[in-house]
Length: 318
Image (spheres, rainbow, N blue to C red):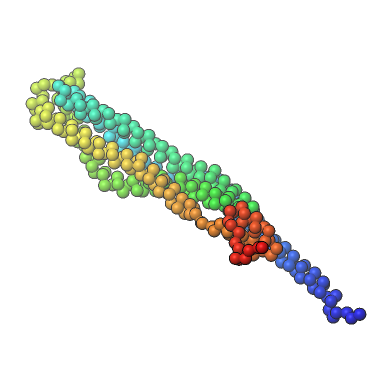
């Protein structure tokens, strides 16, 4: 019998090759696990800093001084407009006859709109600090936990959800300051108009009050002293009503509509970033499985689940 040269060395070489491959896989797994542990530690630090440091800074009213001062100025303007419209309504109602009564009633009805604007201003003022506290105490830590779980479990869904929650936290934190910046541009344009409205309302009220008796009723003889009498007062009242309506419209836009539009725009932007759908071919499972040796049966099963008809090479079995 003849011995084949080196036949005993083949199993040894194969065994060494397998050991080397196992070592490579083990080293790769160790590196991946080390990266995962590092990422989890970093996320843990971020979560702790967000809850203990950043949340206090974001919820401190001193750090939102400009925004709060702007809201306080808007609140004072609303209160001033409410008072002047109510005074003008009372003064017009004191004029004898029913000519100015409809205008007086309309001015009185404007109080409800001013009340809505005032409520929105107060809500924005308190949300400035509350949204910062909620964003960095609740939402950002939740995002960190989900991202850490997604890294450890290799789940893209958890990573995507964590990113969405983090961006949503940033949106609710920035929406009010950003909307105030946009509103200030519009308010600067109509600031002179609002001041003129308040001045005209005060002048009309003073003009009527100077000619009223102790019971608050305007004296008949005093109407002749007023320019154009009742007609002149009616025209001034109607003009004043139109100016108040215009001022309310501007305030509703700057206080209510712009914050909503800013929030909708930011949410749309997030949806545009994360709402992209990637179309995957139906036979992709088969292509992936066919690359692995000895996985034809798995590929067939995946193909059946995907509903893709089996490809043929044109030959038919007899």
